[in-house]
Length: 90
Image 1 (cartoon, rainbow, N blue to C red):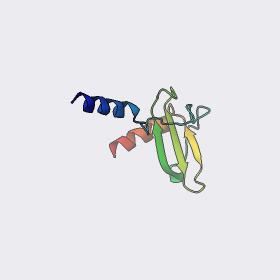
Image 2 (image 1 turned 30 degrees about the vertical axis):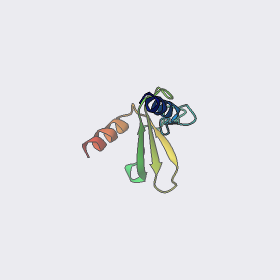
Image 3 (image 1 turned 90 degrees about the vertical axis):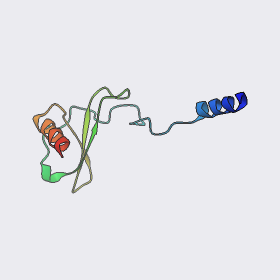
Image 4 (image 1 turned 30 degrees about the horizontal axis):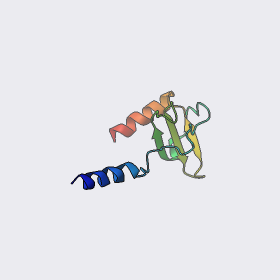
């Protein structure tokens, strides 16, 4: 019984956990404060990253429809706050 427990403990300690790192670079994706407004018609997708050990700031990244490019949205702007509030309602 003790050998089975020891083998289980070793197996659990040697498991490589994947998916823990939000940003593999270990730093913020947005280099500046970001834009304050993006026309909603141009937005395809919104990604919100809360503060973490790799980046101490909340980041809002908007994927644009026509180009597929990314823009950082200033989380302190009125537009961003309303966008997040409306997304939480849905």
